[in-house]
Image (cartoon, rainbow, N blue to C red; front, side, top):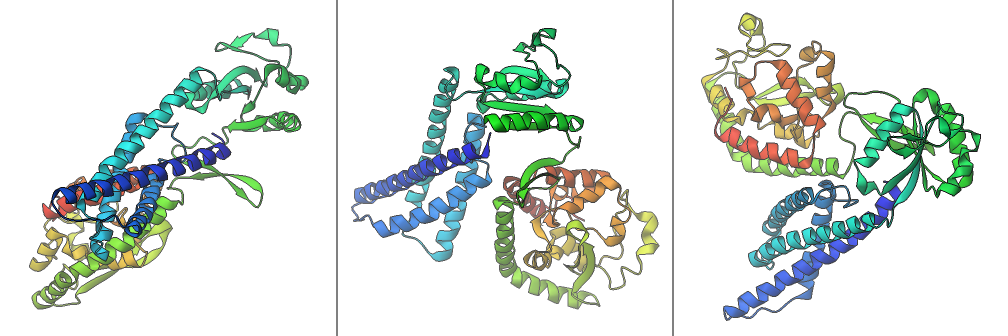
Length: 477
């Protein structure tokens, strides 16, 4: 759908949802007044408190709705998907609000208002979406808002474009004709294609647009025929038709396409990692806030750990090692030392006991691990200093584990893509087996699965499951 229309739909959604959230919060306060009154206590509505609460709620909900893909348009989802998006937003939103209330001691809001608002906001937003989708479906059935389109191009790409439009009725496009680059003569050579009228693609094709009431011309051209498409684009430009270009510049396995404008020149971008967005910015905010809170809370534990290491074995408390981060950038990685001081020098002694396939080195019941170090590894306490790496921006709370430089040198080509996202404290590998996974190919596949399907919800799910994995010592050695 053209970006102009998307912006209009987003503006409509934001305004409508703001009104809905304001009403839900107001009703929540009204219920609190009724509840307190029944208990014989006096409670007066404070407009200042309401407005401050509304400002916080609107900011959090609109950010979360955007991050969860609720905007810019409601026409691209089923109602079940819509309900899931709103539910995710409500859960995270309430969690953030409770955290803010606890942090700044905003006890004037209260649990009754928070619970009522959660239930009402979910219900109101879902009902609005259901009503809007119902009206849109009715409009489409009556032909309101439908754009007439002609598809011109190479036969196979035309077929694919027809399938895309047919499978996405929410686009509001009606195909009234097709034309092929290999059919320059009269249209009677072929009267129809997949039940759609075939139009001659001669020089005067643009003159037929007015007779056909055409709103859009969709060009489905292979790269070798883009020169022929240019003539049609020029004709459409003079006539004033809107042009959509479908093409197959490159056949890529998993790269995502995007279009940007660089100094007025359109640029087609292929990327294999999540696009820079508010979601990634919010991921960094979560990293900083989460790492800072965990670092402060864990300070007493880390102090006791440092004393335990110092009294049980010789050597430094913190183990430092060069690791590989985002796109091959090297950084110093921190852990509590869990091995004897000369463990790196003795690595070659245990080469034949390596249980991992591929470039990674792991030894089961490694004799270099100290007794206290075994406890640290089992409880994952040895990983706590990496919170400093997260605060410095070298790592994230969630992401592929950072490898050693010598391991990267032995990566297969496809495995190098695991370096395309910032490394993390935990990822799918930790929650799906950890040390039980001895095949590095499987480990890399899990990392790529995370990268290809990344979302804030996936991050939160991994963090939640990691807590249980750590508490149960699942897969740890």
